[in-house]
Structures are given as structure tokens and as C-alpha cells.
Amino acid sequence: MTLVTHAIRNGVDTEKMFATLDLIKAQPELAKFQFRATNHWIDGAHNRSTIKAFYAAGGEDTTRSEEFVIDAGEPAILLGSDTGPNPAEYLLHALAACLTTSIVYVAAARKVELTSVESTLTGEMDVRGALGVDDEPRNGFERIGVIFRVSGNAPEEKLREVVERARKRSAVYDIVTNGVPVALEVATD
Amino acid sequence: MTLVTHAIRNGVDTEKMFATLDLIKAQPELAKFQFRATNHWIDGAHNRSTIKAFYAAGGEDTTRSEEFVIDAGEPAILLGSDTGPNPAEYLLHALAACLTTSIVYVAAARKVELTSVESTLTGEMDVRGALGVDDEPRNGFERIGVIFRVSGNAPEEKLREVVERARKRSAVYDIVTNGVPVALEVATD
Image 1 (cartoon, each protein chain N blue to C red):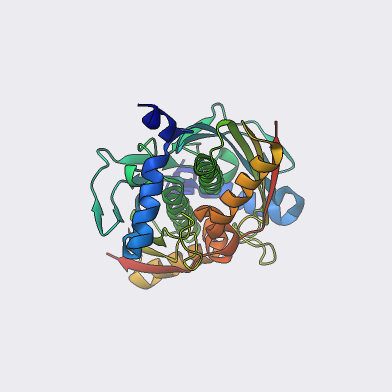
Image 2: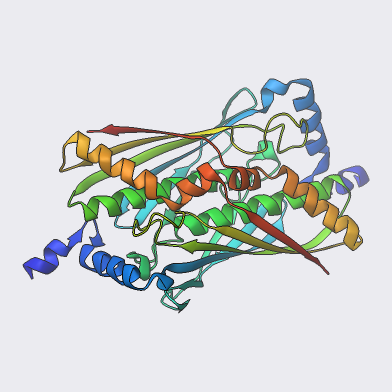
């Protein structure tokens, strides 16, 4: 029982974590994942994504019992009616969530018990780009600022190392800082 | 009344849209926006973002009456308990939502009445990168596939032009394909 108790750190089952890492080292083909989202337009700036199925570890993962449904929108100044966060805000959320989970997992692996992880993200945008008014400003964020406040049972230097390792391994940080090729196909009825 | 009726197309107030574009052309300094998200860790892969305030058109926007609260998680195979979509799935949602709203707005501006906009997004990831098992695969998606199905009262060629223009102006498409500089600061208690 003592072993089981200690295996859970920061809410992460570290025995399962190390077993997963060993399995993927032994069988790298299990590391191929595919995540998915389907989206449909509702009205104006209101659209909705449904997220459930994904491919992992050599097959379709069927462990999720329910689908996630998330709504997007725009505020009034961008011609919406606040039916949800706007897409750029969702991107900030994706980045915050990925860095946070990376911090929590790295800390669990390094025997650091965290007490608090908070972050504030800001994205600067000149909307002339996205609105098509001017070709000079880019469409997306010019820059993103992230401030983390992390507390736990480790010296400041170790907490900073945890955050740095998490930054180096975060999937969404990689996507947002380095970009990803996107292939877009269109079917019309 | 006829004028008002026709001003709303695809749920978008096109009179307000063109007035906004004219205003920003006349006063480009109003185009500086800042979007924000704050996030706090709950347990394991579960964390939560709060989204409300933003800066727009020369000041803090105070039109949003309530904050948006969105939860992230991971499925069991990635050591979570499905407390929400995972961060990479949120990124796909952000991209789908931004392209969809861009399509709807461009169509409204070009007098195309849409009847349906649906999309399916897939992101391929070798999780050895993000899990720190191997340095060779990148952490994030290797590629993203987007398939749009668009219907409306216009010939196929015009619908395709709308999608192409939307792609060229989408903020999140720009971020995801081209990347953005991210400045990360850490405070420890």
C-alpha cells in the first residue's frame, strides 16, 4: 500500500507513467497518435467542435465514454455575440494547458510535489491583418507572453528546471513556436 | 426594414462589418488587440482556463458579462481521466473555429449565403517527442489535415474562392502554419 500511495504524485500515476515510457521505448510504433476534431457552423461567429475519437498505441482508442462539445464565438466588437471564447483565445488556452500538464508530468517524474501552477497568457494582434484591411500586419499574434507561477516542495532552481524541461517537451509550445504544415481540402455540395 | 433585413447575412451584420472596416482603415491604431487567458492547475492532467477581459480599439473591452471557463485533460492512455479535451485537441478546435468564422465573414462580405460549413481536422503526432523518449520526432503535430464541406447559394468556384480568402486571412491558420514567438517567464514562490 505504501508503494501505491507514493506512486501517485501531483495526481499522476508515476508507475503507469514509467511503464508507458518503457513500453514506447520498446515498441516505438505504439507512439503514433492521431487526434481529431469535427466542427460545424451554427450562425455568425458561433460554431461548435465535437471531440472524442482518437488513434493511439496501434488502434482506435475507445476508452472515452462521452464526446466533448465546445463552442466558439466572437465578442461584439468582432461581430459576434459571445457564444464562446474566440479561436485565438482557445489557442492561448491550448498553450497554457499543454505547458501546465507538461510541468505537472515532469515534476511527477522528478519527485517534485507541486502545490500550485498558475499562468497568464497574452497575445498581441493587429486585427488589420485578419480583417483584410492591410497586408502589412500578420493575421495572427505578433507575439505571445506567458507568465508561470509555480510552487512546490523543491528549491527555486529545481522548479525552474522543471518548467524549462516542460517547455522543451510541450507539444503545443512546439506547434505554436515552430508552426506545422496544414493541408486544407475543400468539398462543395 | 428591407435594408436591415438584407444587412444580416450568415448571421453577420454586414453594415456593422463594413463600418468597422472603414473605422479601422481611418484609425489604424484601433486595430491593436490583446487577447488573454489565465489557467490554473487542478490535479494531474486537469487544468482550467478562464477567459474574459481583452484589449481592443484603444481600451479595455467591457462588453462581456460573464467569463468563459474551459477545462483541459488527457485520456487514460496519456495518464489523465478525460476531464476535458487535451491541449492538442483544443488547438485543432481553435484552427477549425477560426477558419469557419473566416469563411462565414468572407461569404457575408461577398454576398454569399451559406447553408452549411462543416470540417474535420486530424493531427498526426509521434508522442515519443512530447514524452521525452526520443529526440528525433518533434513534440507537436507533424502535420494537420483539414477537410471543409461548404454549401451555399453560389457556384462551386465562388465557394472555393471564399474558403481560399478565409485561409489567407485566418489568424489561427497563420499562427499554426507560421509559428509565433513565445516569451515565457517563471516566478516561483
